[in-house]
Image (cartoon, rainbow, N blue to C red):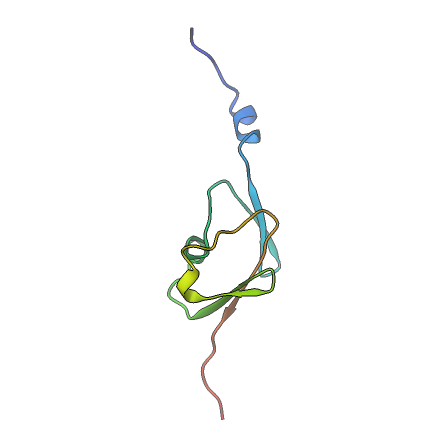
Length: 83
């Protein structure tokens, strides 16, 4: 017996991760770690600092720290120069 699914019903049952990135709301269906997030938003080639819920994430942990539902993520660009 062939079962027919309504795609709207299926997508409604998929858990979504909602997060805020630099004040802007985003949503994803895929698990997302900090490294993935930087790649998705084309920030990998830039020098950045990342904080999740006001806690700085060390660069060495970008691949192991996951974005969770409700997280507030801040990506700060490093700026060189001075007087």
